[in-house]
Length: 577
Image (cartoon, rainbow, N blue to C red; front, side, top):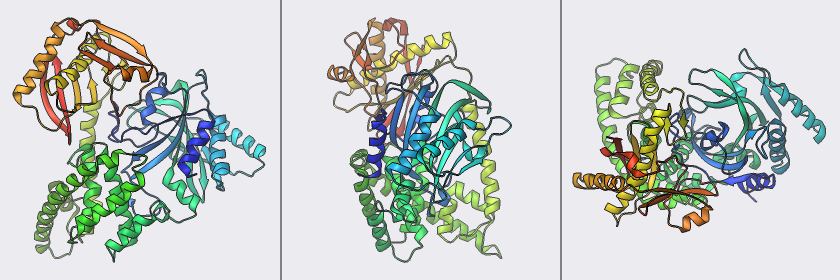
């Protein structure tokens, strides 16, 4: 039995519900660009929303983190990774919920007894001026060691090491206790006791929870007794393929190619397209680092295709989206290769022009930053192509740019107290809730109208975001709607509204609801039973509400604009009139 099977089996035997990984694109969470932790899809259940899976959950979540992207290639850092996690909600009143006592025991038993790893020491939060020392965890570890008949060293560290969260600008957080093997942190248990506001203020949560995470790749490395994840049985064949295909490179370069290709495969499979902003830029950066190594090789694209196929074979059984997106992946990479080759050629030509005017063989940090922002050449790409620059000055310029960008993001997503925020709808007060509810019901009619206007197309909802002022609806479609088609969809939505359709609500088992033909999102985990909302005989969908009672309440909808979200996904924005 492999580690993932052992992990799922152990926690299922302790009454946890196994849930599938969510997308790398966080649904309804504007605080982060990508899924960086196993608990992100579960944040609402730490804030009081009832969990449809019960109060004990286990998952293997795909994650991407780019904070340490320049460190990739060493022994420990990965851009993409799988996070093993077990979670508890609604403690102490929730049925089956648990907190520190059980969480610490589960962590110890899985690491030491199921996997058979030797624990060096464990850590707890030492406390600081804002939060007390975690004396409870200290006592539990002492008691457990005595019960198991083992010696356990307990070390105490501050906030930087043993206090986690929130993900993004606000959310659940709390002290942690960690398990170390071979002097490396291998298991991290977060006790969500507080909610952090955007200003950093901590307020104690009435319903507390447990968020446990252990990186699969790191655990595998220790279980197999090898130096790095790239030496494990998981990647051995792919690493051999890379070394044979591109001889003469440093080992760190080979590791970077594997890591970045793997991350790119998963990001594209979840709908991200290379671009110069947000998720698209996060994807473009690792792709271009790989292409920096391969572009001088005549067989570069063929080599990359072979590497991608090798990685895809490792994961397709658990993540079938990698196989179904293979054609899109190859098309995007080929397109990016053309764009990158042109940008690199122009950028290096400009850099050499600057160098010819200098007496030193490098450019300034400001010149490098302008080169990076103008031609899209990251610091890593410039280094890989032999361009030296003042890196301290570059970082200063980048930090200044970040501050400007961060101010813009905070203005865009700056929050206030909300009456409703369920990930899809946001309303600050009763008046806003009325407007948002009308727009929410309109998304159901818009979904139906699109399918009616384009009966031959495979249209599937990919997400929505609704405030009191507007709705945003994402759907699968391969091209831009013509102005006539756009108008036709709008007229059909308003026709449904004018028909004064009564809204019916039924609660069915998930299987029964799916048999009725009701629409639902294939990438969303639904509770069982589910609520089905029907708008006359025009529309029926799985949804959590709230909705109007009659479509006449909506008024009139105007479709404002359409835009591309990613390849094969369009977005429509609409308002009430």
